[in-house]
Image (cartoon, rainbow, N blue to C red):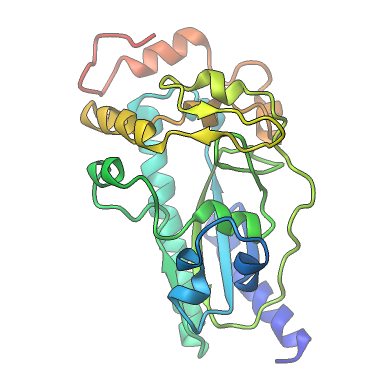
Length: 265
């Protein structure tokens, strides 16, 4: 395909994504999973779908003024809303590509039946975080999330796998994570163990999943405290020192969950 046609197709995809309120979009050639391996080859898209050529990664922001109430039903509703919107957008982009004659499908942002499955095996069949890294949207932070310049780690991701020939986006060369360890201190389960000389901390994913299982039972899943605490991102500057007051956080936590009326400090 001539480069001009590849660029036109990418622009069509970006316009459609923007019309669906997608905040970020990047293209990752599947070769990047092999060139900079962070997982076993079993998780590489080209080994799961041999016809795949590119992964289109889309992101939608999480509002600081809502996630900073976590754990709360307020954040739970935001989390569920962005997930639905991302899946709908990804389906529509994949559908568009299929109608244009390409092979394409989307991989849902979470893709597990219940938290209990993550307690038994705390990993995903396809990493949206690594897809975002390879698509140039950001870099992986100490808390194992994708950090972006605009939204910090307050971004939800979904991917479309396709054989369409599309211009790739450049990966970021410098880490966005400050290494400040604020996310480590914010974790109520202390699942992160910083490693000297590297940005990404060791993480007890089983312990993290157990925490989420409890929150799910209390109706204010997920946690996200390490994401809310991250100081990186232009979105933080928009709100100043307080996206929501301390009293407001307690107020929002005190309604709608199984422990309503028992404020969680």
